Image 1 (cartoon, rainbow, N blue to C red):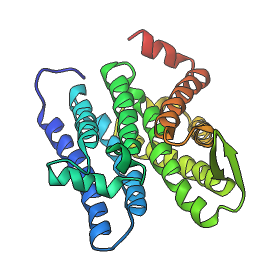
Image 2: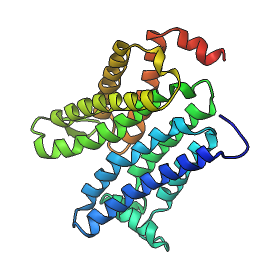
Image 3: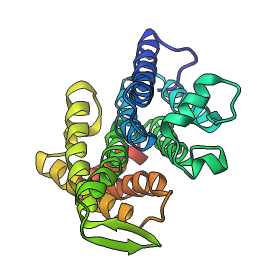
Length: 262
C-alpha cells in the first residue's frame, strides 16, 4: 500500500472523501444560518455524519492518501477559531463550538475526534498486514460518531434515570442509545466493507461478526459512560479498537500469523 505517486484510484477516492466531509460541514452551516439551528444541534449533525468518510480508507492503493485526508482535516479543525482571519475557519468554529470553546478559542471535541481518526487510519494503513482488518478500526470509529453522537440527543429528550461518574452526569437512556447505535453501526460498517472492499473480512463467520459487534457496542457504552467529559472522542474509539483487535485474535487465532508473518 506504499507507492511514490498517487494512482487515479487514489485521486478519485480522495475527492470522494473531501466532498463528503465538506458537504457535511456545508449542510451543518446551512442548518445554523438558514434553519436557525443552535450550534449544539449542528455540531451533533457533523459528529454523526462526518466520520463516514473513513469508509473510503480500504479503497486507497497508497497509504499516505488515506492519511493525508485525516491529517488535513485535523489541521483545519485546529486552526478553526473565532479570531481566524479566514472566514471559512471562523464559520467552521461557529458551527461546531461549545460554549466553553469560546474561552479556549479552539473546538477541542472535534479536534480529538479527528485525532482518533488520524491515529487509527495511520496504524491500519502504514502497517500493511493490518490493512485487511481496518474494519475493526472502522467499527470502533462508528461507535464514536454514531453511538457517542446519538447519546446526548436521546439523553436530553428521554433521559430520566441519571448517573454520575468522573464528575460527569449521564443518563441510562443515553447509554442505551450508545449501545444500540454502536451495534447497528458496527453491522453497517461490516456489511459495507464486506460488500465493496476486499481484505480479511471473509475469515470471520456471521456469528463471529455478531459477537464482535456486541463486544464493540458493549465496551463503547461502558467506556463512554466512565470517560471524563471532553475526552470520550479519544477513549471510545481508541480503547474500543484495541479491545476489538484483541477479541478478533482470540476468536480467530490464525489472524495472528496473518499479521505478524506476512
